[in-house]
Image (cartoon, rainbow, N blue to C red; front, side, top):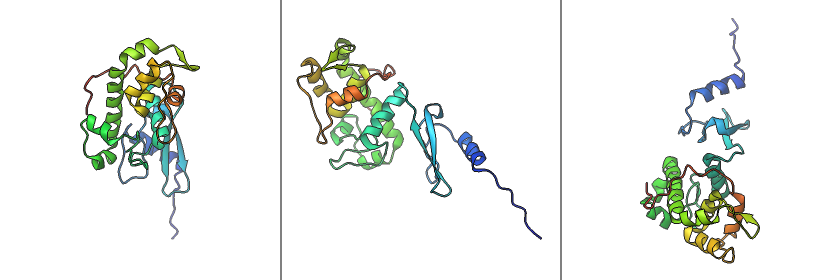
Length: 209
């Protein structure tokens, strides 16, 4: 006697899987991984992997989520476990001294803890916003070397170079420009990450995790 098999279309199976999962969770041991709200993402499926692997990337928008994911892609292509040749760590490429300032001392735990990395990015943004709050008020809306200055551009540049170097850039009217070891400079970040809504970030003097 022949057995009857019911084939469920891949699309139906995927729809069921997506609706069952909650936003911003990482399911260890499963092939489906994501860390973005579905409302702000586009999904793609790698058909060469069985059962399948789903990737979520941010859509173009100016929200804080769009900002942090754009910075993450520039820093590490969004990879939580990445360590670059200079020893910078994680999705947002933190230096050890910056982590220590945020009261994070275990780098192995940091690399294996996506939630901690997300919290650290927000804390650093809050700290940098507090350090640069006067410069933000004075400079936003101006143009320096042809680049419109925005709060998100300032915070992104501070992530690259530190708040002190951003102060020097703004207060010298663009004459002092910091560049990192890979050639990325403050002006590039000011331009690339301008116009995102970072009003969500609160300035906090002693921001820690």
